Length: 455
Image 1 (cartoon, helix red, strand yellow):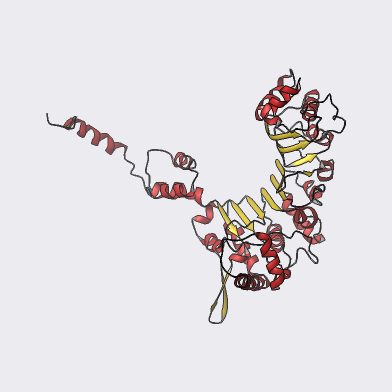
Image 2 (cartoon, helix red, strand yellow):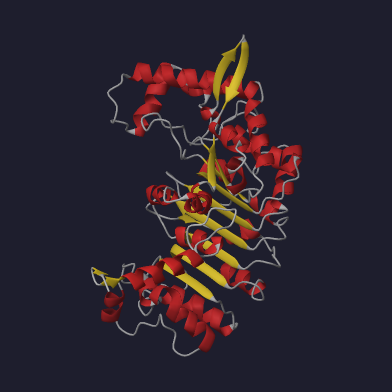
């Protein structure tokens, strides 16, 4: 019998018969004899957007399966709303509006990022603009500052017209109506989709501005407009993330809203399951009290996950938990995360965890300093404060399913070193075992030489 490269005619015949039997012949495109859910799961392991795009080019089946991974997040900003004219009538267009009106893509959106702020009128004078531009350290462009200033002035006029006509609100409402699977909104002053890297959006002000902080000319107008829209449309948002400067979060957006707008905040917080607040501090190290946030959190009775973060400083800002949480208890809370703070006592955190011992199963402590004033003698090791903290948890039988420790340090110790105790605790695994089973405290250090090894 004839053979071709070691394969007989019978082999080829048998292969064709098996291949024809296994070939998919249904009405929908199918590339593999696998359920669509597995194809979607497989493509989800691709990290790079370029790889996801290439995978969608394989076939119609891959194109459909890979669509959700590329279209889950969209970006909204008043600076991206364009103005045109049609027979003397104003016409407004925006990328998010086009996505919202798309019959297929709109069904996959689950995260909406509302970014950037409007350029404050205080930046419009050329001299003031030059001072602000100099603080950015922008050297990537050879354009003269006057030309850049004219672009910002034009952008300011455009945004002012958009807001005065209420088009930003109309576009946002359309997005809320069309995005059926929307569950998370992120407010940030760091624009994620700039048209030009040399023309950044201004951040939330470094100083507390005057006037109505929720008004049309406020740098926080987009935040205010979004909160009002969510409340008035009675949308049950599950996840909320806010990233901004210290003055915005600690002094403005929560605490200086009118009674009506504060009720809008209460309505939004009432349905939240997950909240993340990230503060970017630059100059001072005053205690972060998150003014007004504590009162709002008491209305988030369905809350399951809470993360408070502080970024942007070499030295952490002080966190006083009692000012944020007061004595509130969340009956569904499963996760608490603290990132980038210094605490001068562990009493408040211990009390908080004890109140939630029945529900909380995940704790993350990252870039955290703990300073116990009474633990500051020559006999105390560099691990003494955190050793005391976890020892108290063990005494109270407080346990977790997951413990994430990273760059956890004692703020003050007689050796004047700051070893990362998370390394000694194996990222939290040995402490987790200690809380469950007892035994020696893994942060016990017997000698100074051992402390050096710990660092």
